[in-house]
Image (cartoon, rainbow, N blue to C red):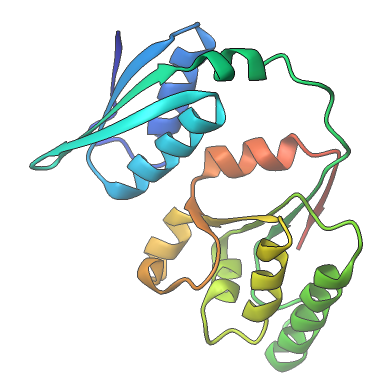
Length: 193
């Protein structure tokens, strides 16, 4: 079993370290981290790559034990995927410096996206864009609609920590730069706002 010691490592380093071992062919992993966001991010990576995951805690240490499943090994040879659209939202307003107009435009933009027949596969919210997933955001309901329709909503954990809103988000999954970049660069088309 391979041990990945990511204690004290900041986002997205635990994910990057774990991914490196997976790419080397590790079928059994033990990942050590010291915070719940890292647990969530590493667990999603492992499960997404076909691993079964168990978590144990001891004081400040969280240990994620993962083993490649038979179905996970077969999933890596899946059929081609359909075309994907990704949207990266880095601002809480759309357009220039007029905050009031920018908020109206962003709400209308997200409302239009929620009504499209071909919804984005992923929407990632970074920097001030993370404020859009707060319950008081005028656009939050549209983002919830998108998530219900199958759009993966990723919210930058570093950004929510910076704005002290991590425990207040109303929609999406707290994520990390690596996962966001992997999803964005893996799409066929990407829009950035």
